[in-house]
Length: 320
Image (cartoon, rainbow, N blue to C red):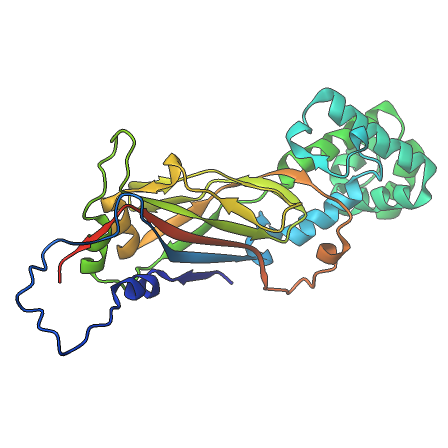
């Protein structure tokens, strides 16, 4: 279930709250262009929280839990260079891939349990391809199993095994972009005007009056990844920025930068309604995470939570 929480109206409402003694006569005050703060001021306002459940993190309708469970079967116990993670960015590197695959075959030779695991995987998921190589009917799993156990070290079978092994980590252990819609934020145009009234135009050297997105990501997956959230409205791109998510960190910061900067029209589009598309690229997989691997298949709790807020630098102007 997709969960997206919009928070900006509460924050801006808080900014506009003030205490005024009713005995004061303010009628003679000039109230146009009142400014709060100066060039050094920083105002932080919550914008949106996106919660991503396991059923949304998929590749061709296979969710991330099933993808990782299959990766566990393919992986040898000993990973290259003695590291505790699979480096997916190097899976097509000949030396890295060769060491990883050789470790798998060595484990199949020395550990009957691993040979059983790979044999079952071949029979259940790759029967037609291996049946052709082995010269047995794919419709006869017992015959395929015996043939594979007997001939898996032959050059032809090893070549087929390595092909599927490599394809799984290079292609299958990735997921489709995440997509969400913001159906509009309940905030008045006067508040938006207040936020954007004095923004420095795009291209201003050393700007002091700016709006930026920033925040954090909490990820429960045993996977380090890169993501690029992109906000758009119709054919118009509003803002897009890169995020690195380290699986060994409890919280990953989304720092404000030139890429996260939002301009006046962009904020108005966000308020009126926008889309968020988040392409994701897995870079490191940390095997053996029993807590994650034992997650119930129907668990709809958030596996990834991205919280974004707006940072307004410089003073805020508004009319009373």
